Image (tube, rainbow, N blue to C red; front, side):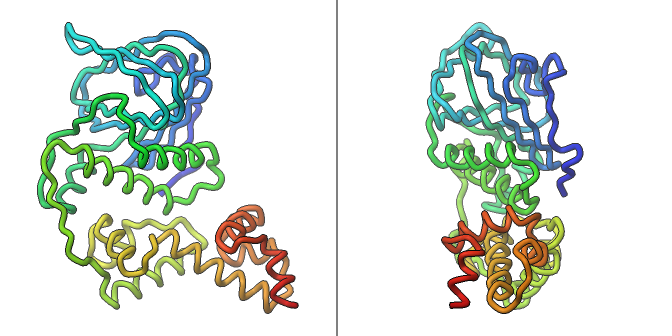
Length: 304
C-alpha cells in the first residue's frame, strides 16, 4: 500500500541521495517507495559538471530513462571510461552489485525505477521458469516504450494527490517486465499459450476490485485470493477482459456515474464520491478522457 504521508520526499536537504547525486544541485528531486519498487525523478536545469559514485550493494537493479535531450555522462569502470550522450527516451541500467562512478555533464531530467533482486528473480521464474544474472544495454540506447512509460511515471510523481496505488503497482510491474524481456542477458523463453482466468477467479477478482473501489486496492491481495502470482494474474486478467485491472475498474466507475447522471439529481461532486473518485476534478478529468465530454455536458445530452 502507498502511504502518501511519507512516500514522497523532497531530498534537497541531503548532501548526497541514495543514488549518489548531490541533492542541492537538483531542481527537482522526487521519490516514491512502494516497497517492491522505488521510483525517482532527478532533474537539473543548470549547466554544470558533477560526479556520481555509489559503492557495490545488494539493492538490486536500476533503470533510468531520459525525458530530455542534451545530457552527457562519462561512465568510469576501473582504468577505463566511456562517454555517452543521452537523447530523449535514452536508457541506462545499473546493477547495484557493481561499484558505479560517472561524471555528469550539463542538464538532465531522468525518471528512474529501482527493482529489488527478489522482484527480478521472482518475475523471471513466473514468466519463463528460469533466472537471469543481470541486464545488458549500452548506456544511451533509445527505447520508445520506456520513453512512453517514463512520461507516465513523471506525471505520476509530479501529482501525488492523484496517485492510484493499483495504477502505480501495475506501472512498476510493466516496466520490470519490459526490462526483463528486452535486456535480460540470458534467453527468456516466454510461455505463449493462452492464460485466462477461470470463471470463478474472474468473478472473485471483479468483486474484490468493486468492493475496494473506495479504498487502496492491492493486486497482490487479489492475486493471492485467486491462488495466482501477481504477474500471472495481471496477464490473465488482461487476456480475459481485454483490460488491465485498473482500466476495468475505471470503466465500471464511469458506467456507474453515467447511470447516476441520467437517473438522479445528485451533484457532480456527490456522484464523484459515490463512484470512488477522490474529488469532482478527478471525476471530471477521467470521465472526459473515457467518454469524450465532461459529465455535465453528457448529462444534458442524455436527458434531452
